[in-house]
Image (tube, rainbow, N blue to C red; front, side, top):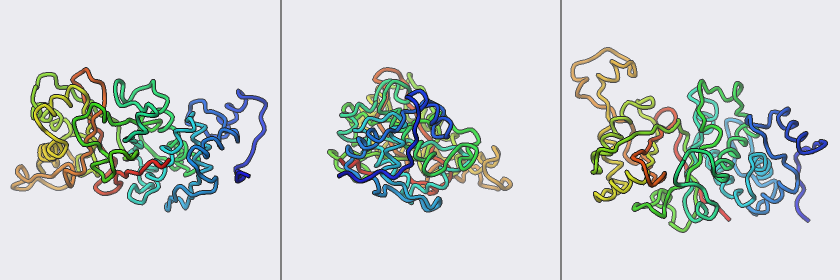
Length: 345
C-alpha cells in the first residue's frame, strides 16, 4: 500500500474553481496553476521513486525541511509532467545545498533568479531547449521546470515577493530560467563533465543569477575578436566588484568561430578573466569602490572574478545570428556558489 500523503485536502466544485482557489491561497506565481490532485502528486513521486516523507533538502536559515511530497505538489502546480520530477528534485537539492546559500539569493534586494542548466541524456530525452529562442517561451520542459523550483521557494521556503523575497527590481528569470547545453553541436567538453561528472550522467547546475545580457559581434572571424567584444561588455557589467560566477552562453555562430580557431573552454575562461579587469581608478571614478584616488590606481587592477574557473562556459542558443550572452552571478565573492547535482532516475 502506498504511503499516505500528509498535506491538507480541500474540496472545490470544479477545475476552474480549483484554479481560483489556488490564487486565493497565494500558491500561484501570478499565472494559472494546475490543481494538485492526489493522483497527479503520486504520479510525480512514483516517477522519481520517492516516498512522500523523504527529505529532499533542508534550508537552515529557514529551518525548513523540503519533502518529496511538497516538491511534487509544486511541480504539479507548475505544470510538470511526471518524468520532469527527477530534474526538479535535483534542482531543489542544489538550492538547499549550503554552498548555494539559500538565504541570500532567496531574500536579497538584488533579486536573483535561479539559473538552471541541464546536461546529459535527460535534456535530450525531455526536449529541454538548448537552441533557438533559448531563454524564451515555447518549451514546456524549460518553463515548467524553473517554475516548479520557484514555487517550492515561494510555497515551502516562504520566499514571497514583498515579504521574505525583497527584490528591488527582480527580473523575468525569477519565473523560470532554464536552459540545456547544446552538447550535440558543441565542440567542447560539456559543463557537467568539467564539473566532475561523467558524460552519460544527467545533471542540473543551479546558479543564483541576474538577467542575461546579450552582445553582438558580426565583424570578427576570430576567437579573440568575438571574445574581446564580450570582455569589454562584461567588464562594466553587474556590480564589477568580484561576483561569485559569470555564465557565458555562446550560440552557434560565435561557437563555430571560436572553436574554429582551436580555442577550448579553458582558454576562453582565461582570456575573459584577463580582459575583464578594471583599474582601481575606474572603479573609484564610477563610485563602485570607496576611497580617494591614489597614485598608481590607474595601473592597479581588480578582477571581475576570483578565478577563471568561476566562469561557466555553455554552448547553447540558435545556430544563426551573431549573438551570444553572459549572465552575472548574484552578489559578492563566494556568497553563493553554483552547484551541480546528479539527476537520479
